[in-house]
Length: 426
Image (cartoon, rainbow, N blue to C red):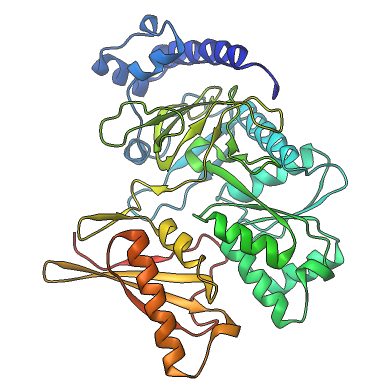
């Protein structure tokens, strides 16, 4: 499957899409009504690009139909629920049939294999278990490929380190900020991740992170860091980079990916950034057609150097909905991280606080220094602050205030990092 030609994959995608559209037009009140209102019938889908004739699905559709009004599986066919950690309104409830779980497991088994993980590896899953989708998806994917799983979940960092050493863990799955926290804790305990453990691979996601953070993790810890992508609506984390680390493989038999202009909704060329829209082609319990993820990325359909032929998406540049508009300028938190990690004295920990004084926005970036860069000499700190402010202004095209924090003073996150506090009343 991973080596099929692009033509074969597209023929397969069209057949799966056509079947899915007919099924939902016939058996889903939600999709039937949407298609009728949009003036489209299953017979209008005569080629793969006709997916653009179908209406979009957005996050609010899932919340407005809480908990299960979009489900097309019967209660007897459901084998599991997961619930997203929504911060506003109702959460998103995702149901799974046996086949849904099988496809999720298959997707992550392929993904982990493409990262070089397999039989003989010990995989510590430090994502949350339970209603959150992260832990269980990787757990089953790792077991499928013959790896041994340590279901550590999040928290209790010293215990995590003990498990890594005692159980000879080779792969860890967690958020990038939590892996950095594990690394800091190891240093305090006199443990070298590089020399005192067998860790060689990290599967990192659930929050924005940059290539600069990857370089720092790989240099300081001596492990390869791979990006993973997924959302609860799509099933959970499903897709990763391969050993080439040149984009995330999106398995064509499971997902049909479009990149569109967030403003016009029109498709953009390969290599150009836009909003990712995903159709999950074999989902049974909670069908997903043209879901606007809000994630900004680009797509590459050229075969990967690893030999796999499925298209790859680039590292996410940000999100449509977490984009900050500061005095008319679009700012993504991932841009801030990218910029800060280019400054040697700065650690990977930062916070963004946005306020409004009258009609003007003010953005404060709190930056934590590396221990070796922190000084009690006020001129040294002022010099670093000036350089950070100047670099951020050049990269973001907007002036920001900078506050220098001492090492270990900013919040640490065991789950998804929350780096933005927006106090404006917009």
